Length: 439
Image 1 (cartoon, rainbow, N blue to C red):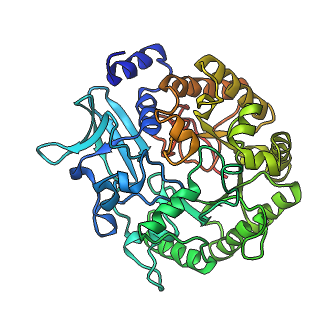
Image 2: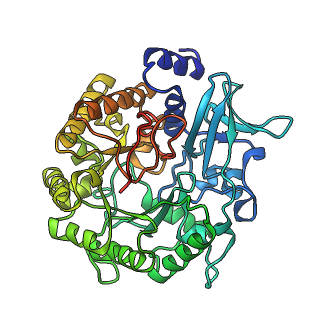
Image 3: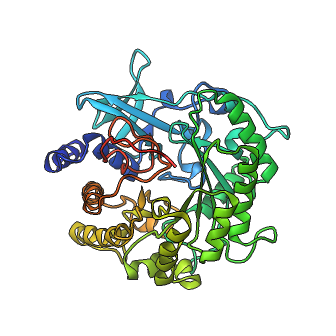
């Protein structure tokens, strides 16, 4: 393949059942996109919703390496439409890479477009600054810092604990830059609250609820780093659960409540449910037994892969199988030094994991791996996984769902190309636009 365009077009031809929009989206997510100065935001004082860095950096460089994009943030997400491939509306999370062959720039008329190998391939839309971002909390903090929204406003992302207690080379997940992201924002003098106060969260949500008159925000996610001891005297279930309890008491039924946490023992999972959480995400990260041990050493040490999986299945007794949605990081299966060296082997392994969970009625979802350069796997694999892996995964995911008669998971908005808003992978874009009643 002589160019990235040739690679993309070859995969679209070889996998015609995968939406063409998803092929471009996966390539942008795995490899990032560059931004001309004309396409950057004016931060919180402008008309475009800026990137919030809601938990990980999701960039291919540190802040000092991003140039003007570190001073004038790029948009949180972009929408692709039209162009020579007649793309349907596609929401893509922004992952900045100044060296990417993809570039967002304005033409001579000021219209933003996505360019690949120097040719304009789609129009680009950027998220407007939401009214609720224009209002401060009583202590002066911004809503974007306390309760940013992603997925084109669908999801409020509440990173309650900005660091992880799996710390250091022998415990941190080898693809995760949560702790570095915390450090780089603090070093840059940006506001980046380590532990969010419950009352601050409630105040931010009051502002969102007041100004989000169209009720675009539909769900919230509570998440943060793993807790292996205690934070503020609380274990993981009580620490994250207290936010859900307060939110559900103050805003009963306003949003779908989700929590991303470790795979906890069943009594702890029950506490999440009792606090008002509706959807539980005990992420299994990577399926292969050896890779789990090598790439998730803290989780292997404190819980262990087999126990982790057992707890995921047990949690279905509490939440119902359809409301247990473990994430995996798509692409680390092929990461050096221990990953699979062929796409066939990697897809076979990942599909084995999908079949294991889906046979129990549990539908995982996935985030497309971004090889952040401060992580061990990012340093060793700056190009990430092959695009072919990501495209074949979309095909395998949809086929496995069909095999077990499952529908798409709740709490992610609408499915289907042109409809999906989930921005950090294309799994929702690749499914059919069927009807479903949300929980």
